[in-house]
Image (cartoon, rainbow, N blue to C red; front, side, top):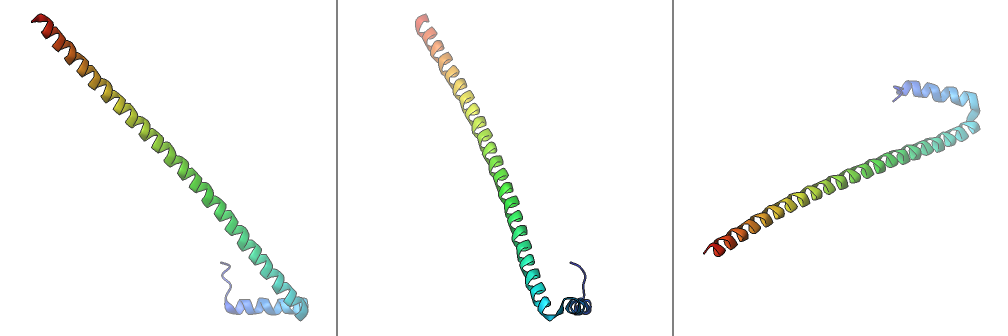
Length: 102
């Protein structure tokens, strides 16, 4: 992440030890650990919120697709039913016309 090698890390630790002393160093390390934990939790919460929003969007998209599919199916079924009813009605009229002609 920061491209810090082992040697560089040792030098940084020694400078920090000289700057804050041994007692201050333990407190500094503890505070840095708490900060790292807080940062990790914040990033996890942020990632979780983003994932939740994406899932909500995906669910809404799926629901909208399902509604459109249902509407299209209903319209096709309705059109087929109307066509079928028209054919039945014309057949009934033709039969009635042929019966009355006889």
